[in-house]
Image 1 (cartoon, rainbow, N blue to C red):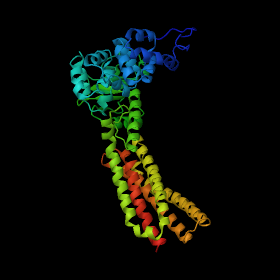
Image 2: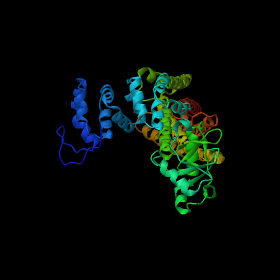
Image 3: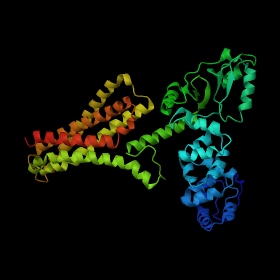
Image 4: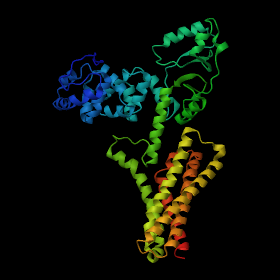
Length: 473
């Protein structure tokens, strides 16, 4: 059985490193483990990792080739396997167990508590979940938990909470907390329910210390700032928790009965997942993309974004082609196309990123939105003018070295078009996320491919129109 190693001053034969350090243990034994696993020497492998802490075994697993890691994990007895699984990132659990049989996965799931079992089962395809549930005694409870949507409050809630009746005395409620101590790891608040199990209030732990044992719970309970239904979106839960500065958010059913709670740990996970999802969307990658996905899923998830980028770039190319006559008259205009496209993309991404972040964190003052857009316009105008002056100065300086026809007029045309493009791009970047958010579309989609391609098209169009009027006119 895996357990934490005892402190010792002796050195290990396989590398001479201190025990208790996952990195120092993993590196010396990695080569020998690979060799033993390849030779199918199960007993030797298990003997080699005997006494390691689950975190150290996890460090070994993620450094092994995936096929070897799956084989090693499959050799672990159920007890140690559960402990190791608890140390592994949720995103890697299903990867590690992808080739395990139904019986093995069910055996592991049975050793997990309800919350971890739901999380593990949720990572597997739907056609595997039902056969797994049929092998688990807790199937009705787990099936009820799994019915909630992936990003809903019901999916991330924990069923580990303490509830007391409003007509109990503090002494009775305190005994209930003691009974629940082993099942509930962290007790932030105690929920108060009526005889119908409906949520009517809550108590802080300090309330149990400051009032006599015979005090009725209903006389000192606090109002519940907010509760959410199981179908509520996890982003909404996160926004409410931040707005009311909550440590836990109670989850209730249609009859206002408490069915779970969302703690700080789950809220941190929500923040991480939402940030990861936004980064993927901003990069033109599907939100559910994973590093270990198959080639088919990789192509399916990324191809639409690449096609969208291709269509946008093709439209920009058509715009450039429409000004073929102007390019023939002054080929030097072609040198400014990448400058205009790059600056438009940068300005648009900057503005959209700030807006998307404000919407995600709930710190964007919606009632003052027009003032914010006005500030964005003014700021982008100032930046555009400064960058335009710099570009004009560079053109005039280049004219001293290279032969440029009418450099002053070219500097004015290029600078004016660049300033206009920056203002346009910043305006689109600040407003498009708001429009998408209004229509219940993830505003993170506004960045990346969407903003870049649209700004390329409008940027090139604005540049050639101004260049035609000012430089060639």
